[in-house]
Length: 248
Image (tube, rainbow, N blue to C red; front, side, top):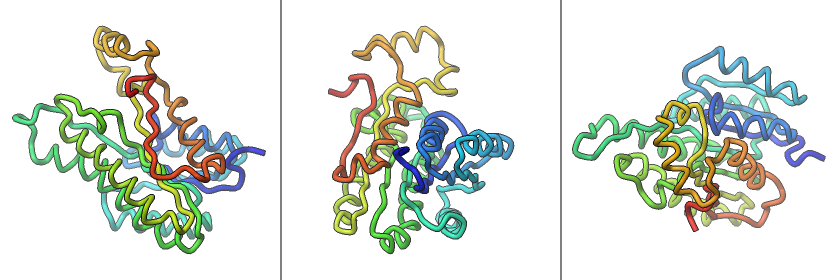
């Protein structure tokens, strides 16, 4: 039996990178997928088709998780369409890098809203369904930058650190209702975004990784699969680093 057979998973920001890798891994393991996207309808329809080849139901919703009303409408539509929510992957995220002295208020607010407020929005809006069910796994995508910081990414680091604190608090609040909440902290992961970086910069970063390679979206997806499945029914409030040994 597949690890997520018959389960329903929500994934925000799933049309590329880590989110797409998680959607593919979950579909391979039998989960029906409801995902959000904010821009390309063509990419969303393509992903629906790709995921459906695994014999599951997949539907994309054009919705901005950073807006509470949109998140509420999205969750209501998913419950109406799919009937339940077994796993939530709060993955939506952006960067607006820059040194603090040059960082605009807009760049700070954009990152905090998309990366952190979206986690509050989706989790809060799904709460009624999760409490009624008395089960569910919430997986929040943080980052090793949220643990150790990074020059030029104070907004991103703050948002990802906030996710860790939120995760631990929600695990304590909802544990008695059999609802789990964990965070994943990816390290340097090869995605469409990192592919645009200068090769010399990438090689320098990889040299600092004990395993001497960048991670892949599948590496992160495998961790998410564990946390979404019944293999982790006694794991909650934890931060799982997927970083090749960067954090020890």
